[in-house]
Length: 255
Image (tube, rainbow, N blue to C red):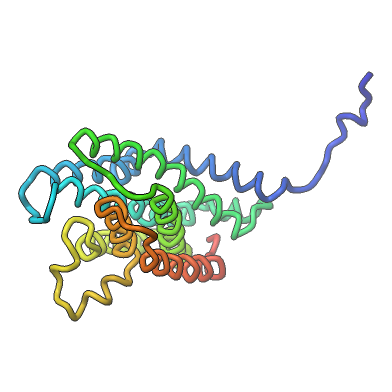
């Protein structure tokens, strides 16, 4: 027999992991329902994969699809974790969505964790779609998939921190412009479709410190060359992730 005590309310916030998972689910659903986000995260990477693998625009040893696919996977991570997230978060600040979240029990680090977790969920779909298209085009991946998973997680953390740092400090319009500009610059300089070795020797060390270059080189060394643990790219991505997430968690403004 139940009593009224069995239905007594339990005031107080839910545990942090539960709040983070709930917010991550909401963030992921919002991204998948946004047509512009899908264009940025799925359609453009697939078009780049097909275009640069088929057209004789780059001269590399071996099959072009084996060279292009790791770079496109890295680009997909950047487009979701950095560009899409920065723009969406910037406009959430403008329209007061983050202000309302700031009044909830969800902490600032909890919101950043939720957004990063949502990005990882979308990236699982991206990797599956891009890999399926690449395999249909004759892609022959190599290497340990655990290293690929580690690179994607670290790359996601690094780009999420950078995107949230921009979105949490700049106005929405400035975030939109900055995110797209950085996306185009990194696409051209990060070795995504053109080898970094083609750039002048004086700028290569700088380019190799960029997160997109580290992610691309790490993915390519494992998937295309069957290399071992990509220590250099992992250290670069880890440094970017630690610094950007730490700064973003301290400077992020809800409104």
